[in-house]
Length: 259
Length: 295
View (cartoon, each protein chain N blue to C red):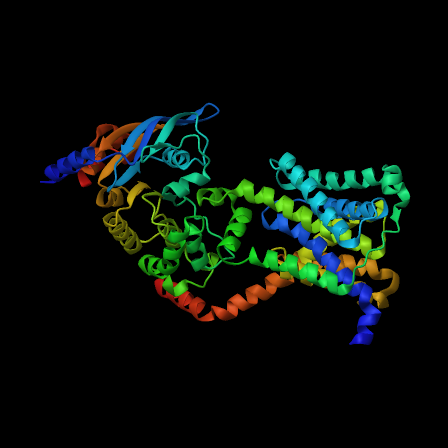
C-alpha cells in the first residue's frame, strides 16, 4: 500500500514542469569540497527534504541556491530562468524565500515589523495584499499575542516561527527551510509540520534541510540524501531512509526499520 | 523669549548647523557604513560656497546650492572607490578624504586663501533660513525611518547578508548613503561658512569628526532625533559647564565616556526601550508566565 502511494507520487512528479533545476552545482572552499556536483530537480507541489549528517553540505547547497554562497561551478534554473549569474537579491524577487539555520531577525524591531520585511521589496500589489495578510500570517504561525514584542524577548521556538512567517508572507513559489524546527519541542514540531502541509495545499513548494528523520519522513514526499557534498540517494522517504548508503552515512545500522 | 534669543542667537544657529553635520555622519552609519566623509563634504561645501561668492561674485543661495552639489558629487565618487572597504578601514579611508580636503585648502593659493583661509564671503543667511533648510533635511530623513523603507535601512545595517536574501539592494543603498551624506555635509559647511563670512583650513579638521560622532553616540545613532539631542547637548554643554572653568574639557570627556558605557544606544535608545517596556508589559508578563508554566 505504502509502495503504491510512493509510485504515484513519483509518477506525478515526472509529469510536472521543473520548478527548480540544480545542474552539477559545486561549492569548494579552498580544498574543501562542501558541495561537489549536485544535480537534482524539484517540481511544483511537493515538499522535498535533504537528509545528511553534519557537514555533509546541505546548508551550503541551500546557500548556493539563494546565491549568498559563491559557487565553483554549475547552474540553477528557476521556472525556466537561469539565475546562476544574477545577484543574490534578485532570488527573493523571483519567488524563492528562505529561513536560516541560526535565527536572523532584527532585535530592535517588533515581531510584526520583522515579518513585514519579507514583503518590503516585492511588487506594490503584493505589498498591499501583505499588509492585510500580516495578521493572518501571524495567526497561522502563532505569534499574534507577541506581535509588538521584540525577537530577543522571545523563546527560540517563537523566534523560529517569526522567521517562518517572514518567509511566507510574500507568497513565494519555492520556500527553502534550513532546519525549521530546531530548538522546538515535539508539539511545536507537529504544528510546524502541519503548517508546511497547509502551505503545500496553497501551492508553495518546499525544500527542507533537517536533522529530524521522523519529521522528514512524516512531512516530505520526496527525499534527497547527501554525504561529503554528494548525493547518495533520492526517492520517496521510506525508500531513502532504508537505502544502505544512507543508513551507513547518517542513521546507523538498523535504524531504517523504524522509519 | 526675544531677549533670550538675542543673547543666544549664535548658539541657536550653531546647534542647527551642528545638527546638519551630525546628520551627514549619521546617514552612512544608519546603513552600516563607517564613513566620516560628511566632514570632508563640510569642507568642500564651505570652500566651494566661499569661492563662488568671493571669486565668482555669486549670491548667497546659488553659492550654497553649488557647495552642496559639489560636495555631494565628490562624496559619491569617493563612495564608489571605497565601497568595498568595511569597518575601521572604511573609517580610515574616509578620514583620509577629510584630511585631503584640508591639505588642498592649505595649498590652494589665492583660490582657497591658503593657510589663512578665505574672507569676505558675506552671506545673507538668517536663523529662519537655517530652520527651513534643517526642516527640509529632517523631513526627508524622517521619511527614511518610517514603514518599509525604515525596515529596509535597518536590515542593511544590522545584517547585510539577510538584506540581500530579502531582496534589498545593499550596495545601492550604501552608495546612495554617500551621496546624501555629501549633500547634507556640504549644506552644513556652506551655511556655516557664509554665516561667519570666513573659512580656514583649521576649521575643516579632525575635531569636527569628533564633535559629530560624540553628538550621535550620546544622542542616538539610529534616528535624526538622536542627532538633534546630541547637537543640543554638545553645543550647550560648555555654557552649563562654565562653572568648572579650566576643567571643562575633562568634564566633557567624562560625559562622553559615561554615555558610551551606559547608553550604548544613546539618550534616544534609552527613551525608546522604556517606551517599549511600558507598551508591551502585558505581553511580556504573559510570555514570562508561559515560560514558568513550561518549566
